[in-house]
Image (cartoon, rainbow, N blue to C red; front, side, top):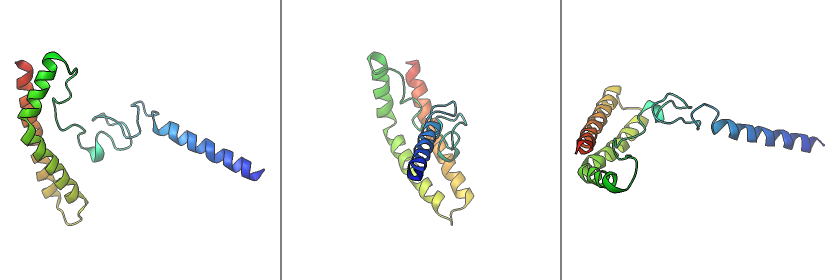
Length: 128
């Protein structure tokens, strides 16, 4: 009898935890989305941004949108490669206890500069 009660309590607890983790914070997921501040980690992981290609997510993949999206991807290829490498370097530096805050701030500024460059390209394509 004790085994049944304990097993039932564990099953209810597990089901409750899963239900809470997936959608009980008003934003659909425990980790949150975007820079909304919801979720366990706030906006992006460790407070960072969640999207690094501002413009790659244009809605629709047909007609003019598909052409503009393809142009964006072609024009930002090198910038996106740099962003990928810089994000990896940042995470490696972040976990290294000898890394200074100044070094991390400089890397963050570089990533922001790359984002701005990509945004300017996407903005230019939207006006065409």
